[in-house]
Image (cartoon, rainbow, N blue to C red; front, side, top):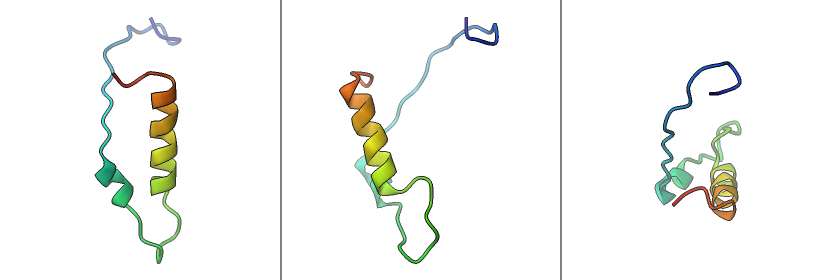
Length: 51
């Protein structure tokens, strides 16, 4: 059960290096910039989450 009383289901995780190509220096900063994507993936790997 989760904190709301619902059942926990399976979770999917997808990552591809091409995700880091989402970058245009002329635009305002986007929350999914390459540095953030890479940092999140490295944190997940350090915790052994992706198998």
